[in-house]
Length: 468
Ligand code: 6PG
Image (cartoon, rainbow, N blue to C red; front, side, top):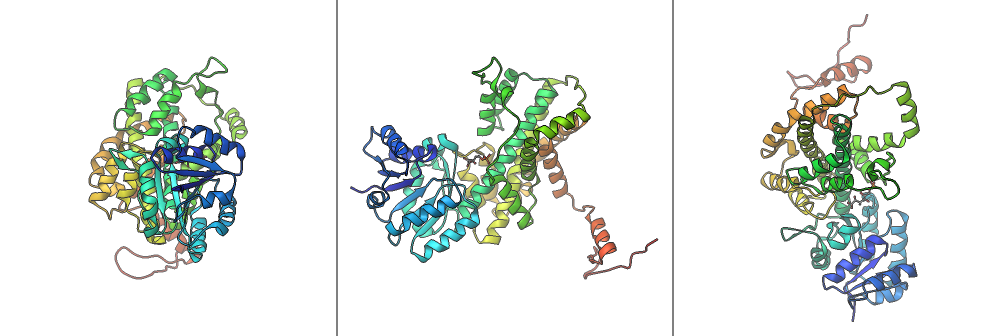
């Protein structure tokens, strides 16, 4: 009897994903070089005949039904190419390789066309939701050949997270569409994490909230319009005691955030496209600033922070809720704007309503807001930016004043809220019919004869600017 699905890379993600496949009545076969990982899977999946694993690539590929559907859950980078090379001699035309890692999208394009020549279908598929998501239902973002996707579809729809019964997976587009969408998902993830930590900062330093109160506040928010995975786990984090000391664990964690690159790639590519995503950019910059711990400590000595008087708790909590809501909208708006542009640039033909839909459950950025976002794009599919959505105008209008007040308070007290203030400036600039960049054009023409356009007539102009 053949196995329906093969999985290479039996780390935590791989093991959980394959067990999820088996739970859904598909026979799944795992492969890993590491005997211990193979044994661990067989042991964990032992109560079912639907899952097995091997360290032998030949018996792995011979055990799979045709066309073979083989998913890779291995670290992004050269390893993916190595695994593909090792697999190739054992594959037949029409077989399908799915890369479930956070591969860089141009790598996916390269692999897809390389494998296409050999008659192999390659799918770059974003998988979000961490280890728990892989086990219980991730959000899956596949891109590649549309016809070949039909072979993978039943398995992916079964294992994916469900939002009110709807699977959080959809064919997104050709080539690297899936990886690209996952990359931007991570950019939004970075922004939402940064915004959440800024709100934590002002509530702690400004309103002097204890961890218990922070836990309460975020829990309450999570049952309102801020309902989201990140707000939910943030509430849980404030409730966690340290095992080594009497403190809360969050207070014992070093304030240097690591990153594996997907947020940075989002920003880099947005720059290439010419699409502004300053909240995401700032989230990347803040991870960089966080890494400069010793410099920060030295600088703090030179510019000591003034004590912050206890601010009105209830007022600050209310403003913080509105500010976070406003800024979450800006983070999604920027990411989706980038996707709309990339769709044109790379020929992905993305449907933003579908993307927002498959993000409603399973993934790290899942949030109640995504149902509204999905509806907004379903109603107005050609929306260049969520800010222009008629459904979002009132939501933004109603939360922006509080967001401004919170930012002013933070700035007055020297509490950094760069994600929130960037979100506000982004909004203010995007909604300004006239920006002061006429002056930049004048400067460019003044020092470099770079020419300018006029508001009152067509053409390209240059002026010999008067000099002293
Ligand atoms: C997900 C996550 C995941 C990513 C982590 C860590 O959607 O499940 O995006 O793919 O690995 O978020 O990313 P950083 O190490 O860059 O923070």
